Image 1 (tube, rainbow over the protein chains, first blue to last red):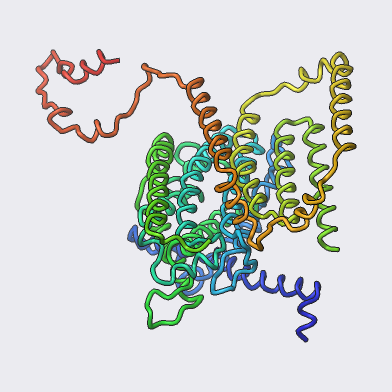
Image 2 (cartoon, rainbow over the protein chains, first blue to last red):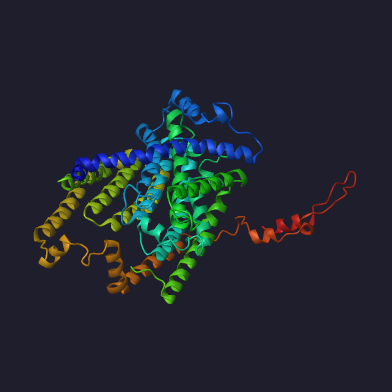
Length: 333
Length: 214
């Protein structure tokens, strides 16, 4: 029996099953994240949020999905048709494939690769293409302005994000996400690296185009930015991609700083429950920030990225590396 | 077997997108095909077992360099009719350059020989059974540290040069000094004025001051 699972066909079937076991809950999670956001924002703003469709409004995400499916997909005449259709697919696809390496429990990642963190970083740096291609292919001023903003924003935040990740790597001594989580057995990296944890989270907000950095959408200035021209399912893919990216950044934060699946209390067993709880807390902060803070102005956003985050993360990296080397705390390489 | 199949598949994609870079009429499409080419090259690195290089290629070239490149190409309004105009006239020169380059490449490929030690290395890219990220780090930061530092300095010089060339101190633009704004008190900004009938309020001191500053 075990022989079949070692053949190529067996490995293929097993991988497909594993992927389904991850992607299906993820998509349901994305659907309910929209519901969660609307409920939490409703509570913060003293409203009720969606409460009509089903008990407590629980079927609202499905009602929205059905509505999107029934609508007409409009492709503008001036648009570059292939790229116009391709852009939402890129956004959504990248948001999903990043999950291939995130370990939700000890060894539960679909691919436990040596350079998992580099894979994540590479995928999240590709995310900008969905936005740029959409903005350009729409052949519309507002969409193009949104794409330009988004490109400048993502490129500037990636640099400090990279330094933060390198600092985490110095502490963990590995690029493998499983090993990074296991290295946090005694203390979470959020404790010694608290400023970097904050920088990473804020850069995550910018990377996912979430408020207060949702300048690429900026509905009060450039209508809806890069997805002005999108309708129906192609719009829904952008929308879902944004939420999937939020979950992905939360998962990354959890793995890098909050000890992944490890239990924070020594007398309780570690497990996937803790991973989900930490991701949920991160997501709550995402929504909380959106409901609380006004949007940044464009030059303020760039100044924050290059003049505040970059120097802090760079100095912190050098300081951490120096202390680790001097004190001999470097993990064996 | 599957590895070979994947290699040929992605090499085909790489070559096809390289051809499309040159032949596509729309410059944005050309850059997007270039990006596709980068990604396929990264996959080839992966197949060769060089996962660090593969992801660094994606992060640096696809994630940063190509974004800026795409940016520039989108902003430039390239007139393609004008570009194709002189095709007849320049074709012979272009063909000559292509021929010379092809001859050079053929010469190199014809006389290329791999040392036996090198081909042994090629089979086992990382000697000490460490992952290639570790191997690369050990090489760069021990044997080749001076060269590595030197290349870093060269890049720094290039960066400073680019900043010096493009930086213009625009005195006339309105800069926002955030700490100065925060330090302002109501006494500096507010003035209660009772405007006399028929005369109106005089322009406050502060505003006049700002106007002379410009």
